[in-house]
Amino acid sequence: MTHDAMRQLFFSYAYLMDNKQLVTTGLRLLLKFPMDAEVLARLCTVLCDQDKAQEAVIHAQGYYQRDSTNLLINRTLANCFFLNRQYRDAIYQYQRLMAAGDTTFLGLYSVGMSYNYLGNKQQAYDYLLQAVKKNDKSAGCNYRLGIVCIDLERHEEALKYLFDAEYLLQPDRIIMKVIHDHKAKAYYAQGKYIWAIESWKKARECDGTSLAFIYNIGSCYAALYETAKADGTFDGHPINVAQMLEQARSYYGLFLEMATDNGDEPDEETQEMIQSARQYLEQAQE
Image (spheres, rainbow, N blue to C red):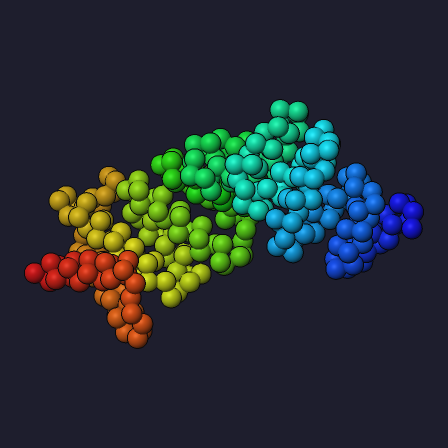
């Protein structure tokens, strides 16, 4: 078959979403015409979708070694590195693209996430922030940036991005649970216990079986009680101190009931929470 005929066959399989035949035809085509960048880029994308990112990296690198100037292949190679968890290689390749003026949302987001996976939170923040400025409608990017902000103790900023992600993601309950949980952690770190309680209660609406959410709500009420018991105020507002203590005891009691009556052996973290809750209830009783 001619090159043109093989290309028509390849893209016909692409339009039909017959990925098995697409891969077979693409590999045959590239054996005869290895510099067909468009076919190679599409083939690598399909391989990555099939969890064959390592194979895609090999194909893309083969082209890159012959011609390192093709932007389509450079982008493809960067994406393959990222999906194959080769984060340092991905960062290098994306930054080469950016230096050439190819600054896309996907590139910025992928570099930010690569730095995040490598543990460099400040660099992750810098690139994810640029990505959000490129596309503020990306729920995933807002969500990831919010989490990184919490790691950097930029709690007010974290709440902004998590609220944006919450708005964009509704009504995905799994993601909403995670967002409410992280919002609560940000509030708790700032001593805003009332807001933290509300966020963890919303998280419980998405997952009523979570022991951690119940324990954390109890901890918030306990912190409110300790803060307000001296003068009966919290953050300048009057508060029912006795009610805060009762709520703390109630949630800790519910936590202990659920943690010890489910028949499962609690993990180390849950055992620590059980010990802490029991200690608090004993002290409160005294």
